[in-house]
Amino acid sequence: MTIAERAVLRAAVSDLNARSAAGDPAAFYGQQLLLSRIYALSTQLPEGPTAEGSTFVHEVLRLLEQATAAAEDAALEPGALDAAPTEPSAYLSWLKKSAREHRVYKHPYYREFIRDHATADDLRNYVIQESVVDGRFDDLLATMQVGTSGDAKMEIAENFWDEMGNGDPSQVHTHLFNQIFRVFDIPAQELERSLTANALLSGNLAVLLCRYRHLYPEAVGFLGMTEWLAPERFVHVVHAWERLGLPDVGIVYHKLHITVDSRHAAGWFHNVVVPAATSERMRRAIARGTLWRLNSSARYLDERMPDLATHRPV
Ligand SMILES: [Fe+2]
Ligand SMILES: [Fe+2]
Image 1 (tube, protein in one colour):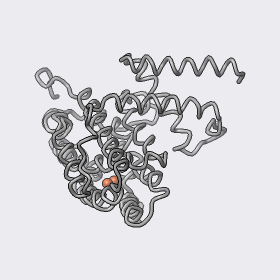
Image 2 (image 1 turned 45 degrees about the horizontal axis):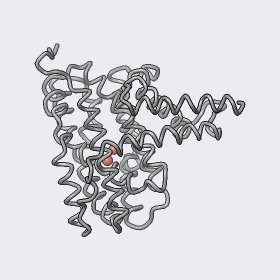
Image 3 (image 1 turned 180 degrees about the vertical axis):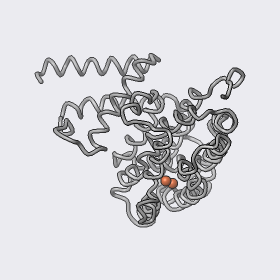
């Protein structure tokens, strides 16, 4: 690729980022799709030649990542990170309180729509959108633990071993998650095509925060909040599954996480968050990652929330 060609492509990516920042939905989708495809180069084993080592792809990646991070920071309430207490247990309580007071907490998408109204097709679509995080949680943990030590590394290792079904291949969480795909017969080609911009963003944010060592505290907040919010949400998914009489094999994953993620969240808060919350810089960064998760999840659920007044379950 010539220098001139690179300049044209770089300008096109910057333009895409600018239009996305200005609120253009198609540009936002294009930005997140491109980012997810570049991430696939370093998160999936290739079948042939790959652009993983391209310096230009890396340059484009950084432009996309910086724009994505800037958009999340722009969504933070002014002063949101300033109120954090300095004492570790007070800090943890403050983090949880911030989450409880956030509109994403007990969002009606789960409490009303999924629980009482969703059809089998809605659930099928739901698992497609969720696959960007749940479908690779083990790899996210593996990536984010690099460079950690002591209690934090042990907690991540225990969490990872749970993801590995504690050594039983039939209980590996990503394997269990894929059982749902079998129930709904979701082919790989349909998967990427069906992902919305906000679903792509959720997956991209997780990869972004887990892959960089300087974003470790943000990953701590982001993944911790993901674990903490899961159990209550999954209660409603299980309720919907049973209401619709869908095959039990497809719901093992969600039933398991109602209990296991409560434990994961508690262990994570105690052994990963608290030891990491040693300085003002770290506390702000953990809170930043936490709020990125809460805010992006809220936008994603808002978008998925249908108008219940007009929704007619079949
Ligand atoms: Fe899991
Ligand atoms: Fe978990």
